[in-house]
Image (cartoon, rainbow, N blue to C red; front, side, top):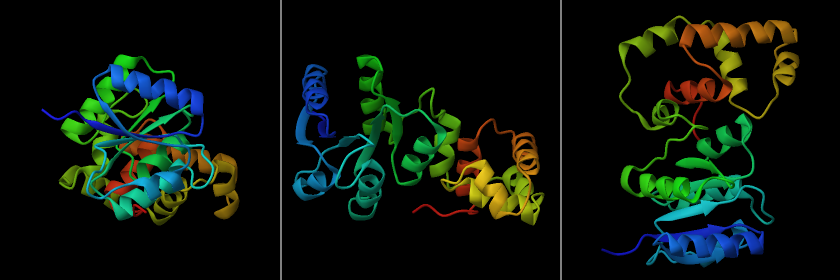
Length: 218
């Protein structure tokens, strides 16, 4: 059986070198090491592509967001696993919308990294505490159901507008200003949707909006 091939994109050389050693020790092959997203796009060989790209977010010359979106357009079958220091909702949402198939923290246990890589190779996605299986699956689940359709019909125009804006990088305060509403009213929309859609956080709202065609993946 051929070893799984991994590409690393991280501008911290020492961290990347250590990660390369770990990847090798876990039984994978390090195919590429890159300091920037731009370097990754230039080094990719369509005849010898990696199975998984471990993608840092904060890089010069094409950050992880931009590079992941580029890969989705040019190499849609290439799997990206975000490996980041950021655990905030906006970072997770943006990476998932741009095409990442999983998201884990840099301080994760090596066995968690191995499980993430294996999941992506075998299943196409990785579920973690940051991104639950239910939420991540909803991005790629093309089989809708009557329950979701009914929920969508029950949303009013203002709630749909709020969902669209919540799927951007705007803060809730900025959304309130854009909709000419008070922050308290926006909090009310958010909490109402949490209850109505049985969702617990902003990531869930965005994935619901994607799944139901309220917003489109980039």
